[in-house]
Picture 1 (cartoon, rainbow, N blue to C red):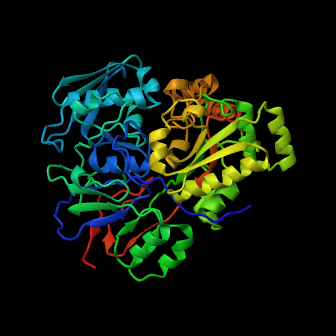
Picture 2 (cartoon, helix red, strand yellow; picture 1 turned 135 degrees about the horizontal axis):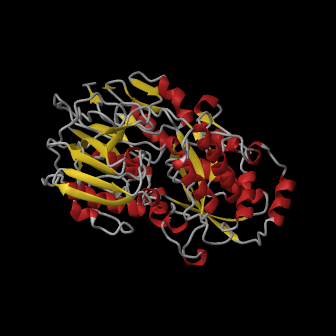
Length: 525
């Protein structure tokens, strides 16, 4: 069965302030979903990441090639045979509450992030201490050399954002409910209306870097005074509002509406996301039936990635890539290990036999289905149908994405409000190699929601980090994917590369792994 559905993308919205102030109307942006959490450490929700990139800053950014560059820091000095990193904060960094950014704010923020991010275990295995030597000097004392440190400090999901120490002291497993950062825009809490509206004003106290902007690196220069997010769940309504000039930028126009938008005077469509998004289904590895790897391998085999991507993006193969394994197609780490699991299409009878042999006992699979996220809605619809056709008992719980974001941290049993599976979109850069592959990492209680525990994946990951050369890394990339196909920490659904749409009087949009707002300008229409 083939369904035409809707589109979504993992976008990162980041805005900044200009060398020349630009007065005028606000830039009106239609985000991919409602903003329900303000804490980018507590959640990996893309919409929270989008807002966080506007409000917060990080020690390092990434350029278009995903190479880390100093952002909040002037730079770093490495000594003691690679076991000591000294980072000096730039002058003039201030939080939106009027307090200066100090090294102790950075220490508290990083310690909170490390406890929550699945990469934290990796970092802590190399780090003896993070210290504030003085107000502007941050010192990392390492147990052994760790040249990849800036790559981790520049990641965007979840982000190692810097917030005031008073907020960073919050338990990482509890949400920070204020958005106070030092980035180029400040959040306006008094204007926030969940499900409808969020607003951000340019932070005039922000001092951008002088280098040219490149994705999240370089000078974050804001050229609009105000950005308003308008939540528009219906894709057709959002597209019509863009065509009428009522909004300036639609992050996720429905694929079927792109031809109509291309015909509209004053509307531009194009790909801002250079790396796309990987669609996934995330199983809960704590509770039956999804705690059974053999059962998960059946679900993996039941999914036709091409069907999922067609339902999500349409017939245009330039907008999606499938089938893929645990690395995106064309990346250096992509390999053929285990790929028959997603390349070979099996008959329903064969899949039913596999299901019977897996030990599945007819337990209910609680599938959280977000109806307000067009991509996730399409992916979940196709997956639920595929599972039912082979005999899986599916409880398809229709809800909104914000509810899933709040619910997915729960480890409760299914009969007490727990869950078995949910869809998600993961930034393509997290699937180019094992380095930042949080979705595949399987370190149990420290893993991303779903908490897979597979020592073989973790061993390959650790060996990849310590590999002395490309050949040794290749060996571990194969081992990493082989183990992932065996334990199925996540079910890959394909990579999608959607277009964005904006008014022609909006210029200066920066490309990266998701749409960002630094440099965006809005001329009078």
